[in-house]
Each structure stands twice: as structure tokens, then as C-alpha cells.
Image 1: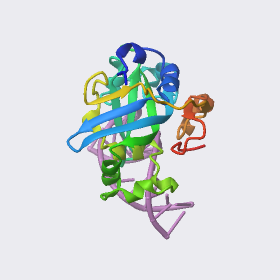
Image 2: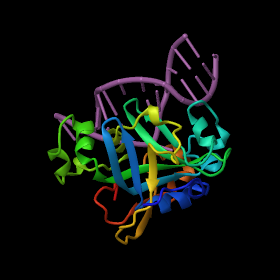
Image 3: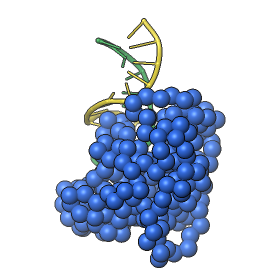
Image 4: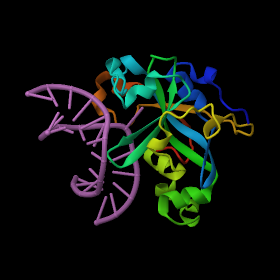
Length: 204
DNA sequence: CGCCGGATTCCG
DNA sequence: GGAATCCGGCGA
């Protein structure tokens, strides 16, 4: 289990989005430790990407983290209800990010169920789709991630990503990104990536 | 200052 | 198919 370093994140979002698949996200909070395999990501390529918050060089308080150092967390609220977790990629002032869209719980599963449903294990063991941690909002709810983690350094000891030393081989599928119909030609870019056949992928 | 709408999810 | 529900972003 090797912690991913800044050099890894200091590349374009598409490259990082693909390479994050199969890696483990680790988060520690007052409730304990969570570990989960990343199974679905989306790349947001920054200034030239009409779907990105930083498109056209838009630079506001919310988006500021994307302009900072690579390897930091960008967490924002969506629809007034949910949070989305992103990893900032590329060098300072090149505002790219990777949205984490799906995870497969490995450790801390009871607490994830507690965070999502307010009760224990049974709901997450069910194989129903609604109990999967598929989708950026569900994932943040399961891990207990909110605006407190915005800007957090992923090379620290609280929220970080590690290489998996026991990873089954998989093939990467590419698809259009979800929920960006306003982005004109960018809506057709194949910048969503997922582990082919994994149950925790939001849209197959 | 007011208005518009979103990188979503859940339920009916 | 529609509601939930908040605040970012932009124009006045």
C-alpha cells in the first residue's frame, strides 16, 4: 500500500482519472477509518473544458482550490443537497480535477451504512442498486465527506489514496460524462472512466 | 440584491 | 416524472 504522491497528481485530468481506477481511497475521521476502491471517475480538463467549473478561466472563491497545487481535495455542494469529491490535478494555475463517481467499500462498511441510513450493516449488504455507493453524492454521504474536507492535502494523513497491492485485473471502459448537457460539444467527450462490469458504476 | 439553475438522489 | 433545498455566479 503506497501512498499516491504529488507527482502522480501533477498530470492532466484524463490521465489521472484513468489511473485512479482500482486504487484505494482512505479517509480517517472521528468515527474511524474508511477504505474503498475507486471504480468510476470523470475528468474535468479546466480552462478549455465547457463542462468544468473553471471553464474559460472562471476563478471564484468556490473554484479557487482547482487553481492550487495538485493533489488537493475539491469538495463542492450540488443541488443544495449533496457533496461531490474531486481530486485536483495538474500544476498550479492549470485548474483541472477528477470527480470520483463510484467506490466499492472495503473497510469501515458498517460506519458507511451508519452515515447513509443512520443504522447498521444490513442495508449495505443488500445487492440492490440503491445500496451501492454509485454516484458522487452517495459516496460523500457514505464517507462522511463535506465542505470541511475542501482544500485538504491528499498527501497528508487524513484523506489520501493508495496503490492496491492486491488488485484484480480489470479493463477500463470510457463513456460520456453525466449531467453536463449544457456543455455543448464537450458533452460528447469520452472523459468518464470506469472498471468494466463493476457493480458500483452509476451508469453502465 | 435578486434570480437562475446545477458534475444528484430518492421516491412514487 | 418531480421534489428536495442551498448557494454560487452573474447581471443590474
